[in-house]
Length: 592
Image 1 (cartoon, rainbow, N blue to C red):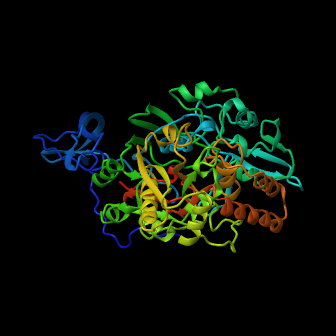
Image 2: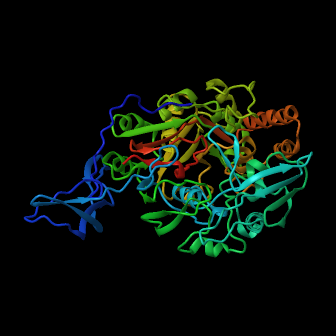
């Protein structure tokens, strides 16, 4: 477990005195008993944005611009009852304290959590992309049948229990009793069947379709039971049910309604309130949430701040409570702030260079890909990007702690002469260098990785010329990544996934997110064989060959694993960094 949090920190807390939590004394000339209601105005300042110094470079000149802060004052009127007690020649009026409500584990209920996110994308979970705000929204308003836990295990969520037949070709799911959608209607097996039927419908265009197309039929014999009949044995279903596209939605709902409605349709711990995808999203506590005692916060507000500098300054100033997307270079500065804690976890979250393998691309030639593979100093890139955290990757997306990881695999390191020989075989030399533009986003360490790769290659005398092109993080996935006419080399970032998902989503032939357009019939066959093989040792042999293929063919240079990190104000408790970057905010509470 990665340990980034500070120890023995002196926490500076701002003492907030509630009007209902302290005694107010009034003196009068006569002794009498008074019971009256008093209107009290409490002025709250809500900071919608924070001042940020932006360094602007133009034609060699550098200037600093400080943006103005917009402060909106919200007037909140509270009515309290004052009860007087009789004393000699004076009246003492006491405001009755409001007791603090706590959970069984001492967690405090109430409060508003403010989270700075990058952006917001799709609202329909089945087609959700890589937007941070959309991922948070989906995780808070909807539920899965199963869920990936912090230790890598799969735990039940809306599936109260599940079982499989002997050859694991038929799975029976017991739907959780007592769960309700936010309109009050009960969750039934019909909702589960519908949710997966629509994912399996090509018209929905869900990225999950290619991962669960081994499902042959889904039936709902009664309100509490769902049966998944597969095309053959498959060990992956319980894990695939936990994919973030596999949220359960009400039976019969349309994609248009899910995408355009001003409300949500889930069973999760929070409901959708005010929503402006360009500014903020308000989430309100669902009082009838099926998990007893949760959530703790009354409200969660996501503020969308595309610029990392804005998010960093927002948490430092206290304008927001949590940020989850920031460069690892920021850890030291955040940890130096006594009111902020940074927590992290080792993970299979990975950063890679995607090479377009289609005909017409310079990387259609395997020799060109191998030339770049051996040209990069991976130790240099990792240290430049992760500041000592993380680990080198080895040209496939399988995490080192995954049961299918091949322990004896040959580790790729920089080899100048081997690189030169591959480049020569591809027709490149000093008079005709391999010249490529590397598209990168200032998001999730991708730009840092691209610049480090550029510097690493420049330090050699190899005939490779790389020019990094920076793109805005808020539009990178929609405008650059996997877009027609794009350059043959682009950065990418993936959260950690189990081996079967990690490879099939990004590298399986014909997949909607096959970013390198790689096509290996043998690897696809091995993916199929491994999913249907019950014997662990045989299955692991299949995965060994899959990794051999990816290391040899190198459709994508997977360079480094990075830890997942979360920075939060000290008063926010219960925060854990998840290896897959999932966020369970229903477990968080405030001490204020």
